[in-house]
Length: 184
Image 1 (tube, rainbow, N blue to C red):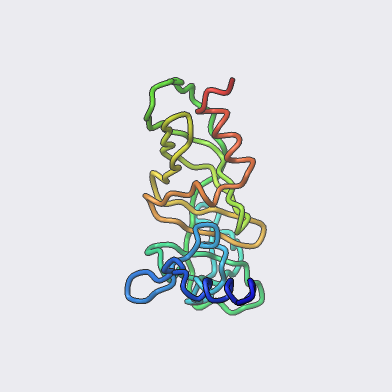
Image 2: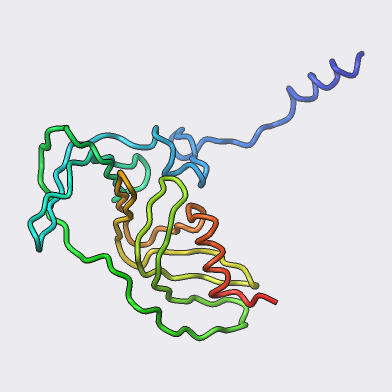
């Protein structure tokens, strides 16, 4: 038997990891959870109006995530007729960073208020999160309340309790690491 034939035979008997989730659904890789267009379903076209100024911010295509309840994405769709109007509020201005106590203990949760940037889609928001640090590594970055991330042409609404660590931009991860990990 040739080596190539033996290799093919062995490959046939190797078990590949099961990529099926509950009820036969494909499990999404964390890095593609929000970026994969197949995870989103169009619901309607929505006009966003700023509550205080009554300014039309634009018309957006509202997309709902197939597997994350309460997660929606708004992508600018100017020129499309809106079937609904939604009032939004807030000034989205940063607040001064509060002093946080650094600790060297093995497992800690740190509140953090600052700018979070996601890689794909490229959106960001000033928000509050809970950063879990264990063994000198960031384990999770969990939203403490529902938040709308905004980008140049889209909005992404995420519910409270979502861990966004894997979706954070590289620079954002570096900034959090400088903030909470003792760098020597």
